[in-house]
Length: 433
Image 1 (cartoon, rainbow, N blue to C red):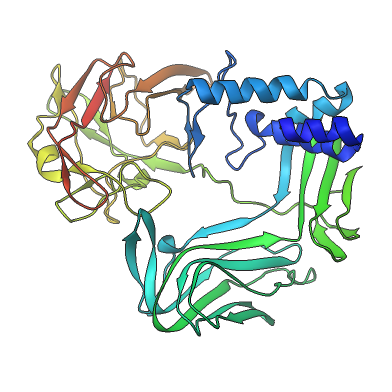
Image 2 (cartoon, rainbow, N blue to C red):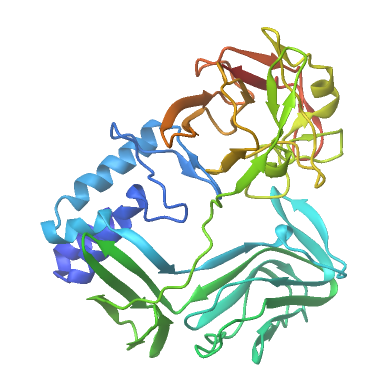
């Protein structure tokens, strides 16, 4: 941010001021999760994971936010307004984690090398359901590749292919991949494949566009900004419109009559009807198994992943210790079970839970924990008369002390790390009333 502001001050070029304000929007929700990265008291949050914000706010994060905020305040007032614009649609890099892909019959296996998780094999292939590519993209594979590795990306009649002539560690770059035809209502899956004479390893797949851009809502005005980063002319087909760019050209203009694609949000909202299970104490358990979306409990070397939503490996609760827990708090019994997919807990992502039969509870008891810090949120309770009551809820970090005001916890003496080894760190399950 500071660099862009200084470029604007030194050159007088308005595009640097606009880019600085748009970049500042990262702190206010112009980011992949569309969530603020700064708190109400001026604190900067520590980090953004693939599915959540790490709301710890150390000195460095807060100083960075305040320095950026101070720099942007030196821009013209009309430009500063862009930092709070809401994002309608973005065109930017696409990053795919290799280990999360379904490789079908290819010989790929999941590996962990120097802390990097990926796939290894002589032949790796997978298909990805990816939305329409709206401009020219450059594909790249990140990893280790022997000489004579062939890499391909294809969809329909479009193909990009490259071959290494020597051993390569880093990025294997492919020729440009064209935009999908605008007259096709549906597009098929993208096919990625790697073939080598000996074992290769791939960590990530990237698709980098020649044109970056966004559609924004600023008060009552819809805006488009775009930047052709290449040294050749380029075209973007988005929002039902065509934008032609000269080399390195920057655009900011009002738009109307948008026909934006329906993008899948990072945090999906699930709406599921759950049933009630009576207990001996006269309470009623909500059967949340239809909503379970994470496997956080496992055996020694048996796999689980409680604390790493960005990958397929993470630390997890030991199933043998969980089974020994009494799971009774002040006479109220909790229950832990798997669903048919082997999932045993629910990562909260704004799910909508509809109860099968009306109830009139006196109390609501919840068993849970957080990872990568302690967090708070809300549960919105909807009533038959249409009213809604919001109740604050907070849990402490699963391996930390009770610090969020919970009513109690169940403790274990060790956990398993991402490699399946026993760690003498005490994980907990907290309960609140």
